[in-house]
Length: 368
Ligand code: DGY
Image (cartoon, rainbow, N blue to C red; front, side):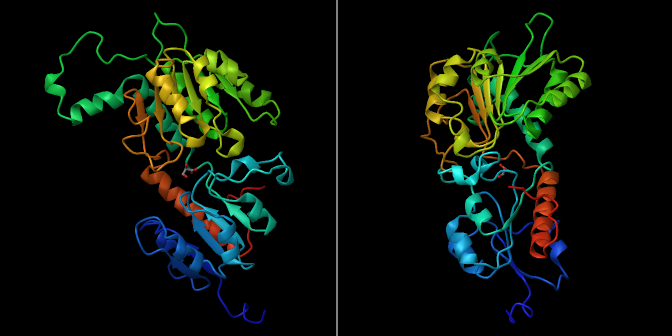
């Protein structure tokens, strides 16, 4: 309309992105910027009001880009930029949107987005190393009783504790000459899994199994390249979830969220795992059935668990069955929370937003 030629595009940013990133917007006279003024989750009502007539919105996973948001924004909306790598994975190709009836359990409704021709920016790659770091940390913490031992110190109980030969012992991740070779298993073998494997090979891990989306073709060339890059790694094989559960000393859950991966780790899976094995989840809480995991830990089907994500987060309180499990180490979804990575994620999210608003190619667009 004649109005739009005189009005600057408006962008809504759901969080203050901090002193390293916000200055990128200073002095830009070509866009009107609205930023949630507080240092907390953006208020839903505020967002739905501000987004009216906006050209772009930058949000993160606590905010929902659902039907109501798209309706509130209206036809002016060109881009949604999420400061996360996660989105709504059940709608991923090659599953056609029209064949899916399930509703998104992730924060972006990809059906609405696609139907309205809105672009989606996300932040892959920049967080891979930070998440792989914390994934290894969780494996170590869960194996070596970090949860209960830190608790002992924090609650002032250390003076009562008498050092004993086998107190607080757990399985060792690094391989000793006397111990059998270790096998790690990855549910999902994307960027973060591969970066995690790379970190584990120097620990003496010689065997790696993984599962992949059943629709994806074999990645033989990639696997050959990984093997030739890491001469001490003897095995790298795509297997069934069943074989992975039975054979792995550590199982890493690093697949996208959404309906298609919901409760991939359920009671049946956990019952197949080794007694001294550890489960690590640094992807989305929905992949693991919390009740089944609590049962597996309390009945000793597996050794321990390290979780950066829990189904139903952040409403995880002291009465949650997993919080009560001494062998379960839980972090409050901080996988990508290094200073450097968050600056990179915020910068990329902002650049995606601005590119989308001006019809340019997004630095990182999810091609649906
Ligand atoms: C991601 O980037 O997906 C993280 O889990 C934060 O949402």
